[in-house]
Length: 536
Ligand code: SF4
Image 1 (cartoon, rainbow, N blue to C red):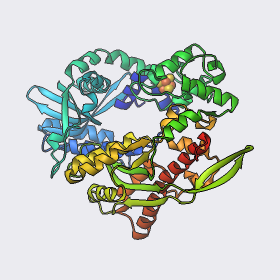
Image 2 (cartoon, protein in one colour):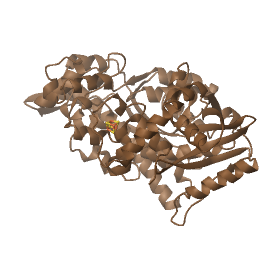
Image 3 (cartoon, protein in one colour):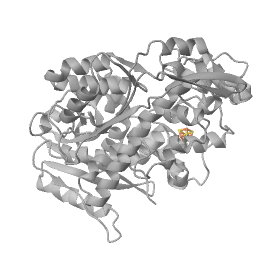
Image 4 (cartoon, rainbow, N blue to C red):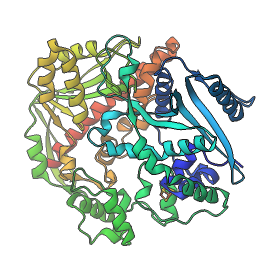
């Protein structure tokens, strides 16, 4: 029987039930849309890291059915170690323990004067840990397991390291592999973890051999160190039906309704919205619960008016699309840089004509007339750096000192400031645009307008269908399948350069329609706010 591997061991460390479900009920896992992208990026990073120490050999073999032939990879590793190969990638080891074969592959195994050093490669970036090296600890169990397997196979492990991307690295010219990666010595953390491995392995093997699903309650482990793929399955098993405490708006900062606070409620049997109704967990959270239970809208016209008074005509509704590579492709880019390749812009001039309409017995007076103008930019699909031309077009399309609206503006502001830092001659204009961006999400986050269908989320993808239910013009699902969300845009744009002309053209059209809907959606949301606040 197949025993443990790195991923099985770390699954057990998170939660024994996670390991059991992974083996016996893998179909219950919820795989998020970004998994494939992260997997592909991990492969790119892993392949580059193999070159970190110069020449290397990579253990790799496939059986006729296309699966990895682990036995041959173990044999390749053994031979190369005997021959004194200095660097072995995917160095594979296996041994029998308790009637099961225990396996691990070391990303890079490096010969040292004292023995062999293990280098685990992660495509995460190091400044994630800046000043908080303790965050590296989550990788220690994985490396400790590798050290245990190698030791059991008679290999003297002389060092344990974590290789991750250096987010201080800025590419200039050819990729500098030595600067791209940061090597962290994990010895203290791994030695600490190493002592726990034998007992954990024995417990994990018991779980593997059992046909009984472990009976474990929801806990902090479900999100630590990673969000568990079996979360939806386990929630359901424990009778948690949506909407529940786990669907309540989390908010930001210290006062947020964190996962830990939600768990506390769960353990106090405050699970359904009915249970939570009499609690005081936060004004927005209480509003969400009340709205869901009563079907009522919450509107604070004075709050909305205060927001609208900050806006000045003409209004520029702006939205960016970006792509992101773990390894920087272009000069001046860092690891995981967001490379902006497209924007959509709706421009609304002041209207003069006043039109009356009637709603719920009320007479509404709206200024109408001038339809918003649409402008857009989509970089050529030639694989070249799209940023300079985009920045120039942006400065042509948005004059200085105008009122720009973005939804969740942090994203647009950050991209514009990055462009400003990259192109000093455009910096003044770009910085001016960023300084004049107002966030259309503000009235929703402030609780000035809430409808039950928002479901505790203020993203435009939740707000739009909640405010315009059933409107086919505003339904992202009615767009071309090729591009219906930001993730699709991020994936499809870099691939267009390799497509046949017809498919490339259709994909570019799909991108344009998607991005245009993002800013049109903002125009509609702004109009709805005006209507609710009685502003003409
Ligand atoms: S969701 Fe929680 S209880 Fe269920 S397997 Fe994952 S970590 Fe364990």
